[in-house]
Length: 366
Image (tube, rainbow, N blue to C red; front, side, top):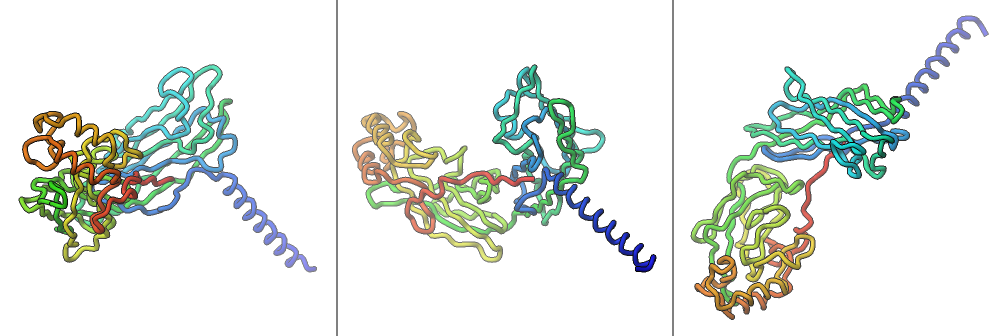
């Protein structure tokens, strides 16, 4: 074999060895990274939760300190909270951990996060956890689609001997798209049961659109129905959920009738027409409900029975189901015929549906 060929083979072997080594190094350094969906879409004024996770970091249970910088769009509201690695510890205490967020100036929208366990010996993090921090971002108002991103830089994690556990040199980026809300997109009607089989318009009833993924309201103010129970709602495009009355926490506040909900896929163009939803009478209290799921149960019947003979204002007008000015046996009958009805009235079918009770907030992970 001549000298030139031997030299060429040696160079190729060295190059291949270098590439294999670099590949192994990159794999052994697996850590925080973006996960699906890699480009979440949210509506203006919607809130999204993002987890900064540790993945593939050896001996992470020996974590003692960490630091990183969060870079967020300046027009977003942002809150940075501890991740679930610290669920078993108390914040800012001895035998707990310190979690500090410092805004960087003059660089608006950037924050340095410092985490340190405290105690002697140092406590151990939650070994079932995965996230160092949770980022809660609320999108701004938008008149046209807004392309932006949130990122993490300078991630460093140290063990209880002060030795590096992990160092992320590359920027971790999560793209975001904010969609505007505009135009009348939903038309419908709400009626309430005020006699056996008798449904009347729900004048002044509140209706509100929510994003399906996170149950964040599309509008800060709910729409009110007119004297025929009719309404129109503006809501842009995309997957949304309609609630009447609007959510308050994990379910609407009882107003005497089972709440209603609809899953909608808004595509723009002509408004989406909805049939009139008929809300069943008898949901007056939340006691006895499972999974925050509205229901007409024994607790509702008892609450009504305790108010029979009293004025409508006794505990609230919601107990006067037929709106005749008194709480009497007729109200008990209305609730009794709907006994064991559970869930939200499905706007499209008119039947109570418990699947609406499982709505939760979408989690997008780094």
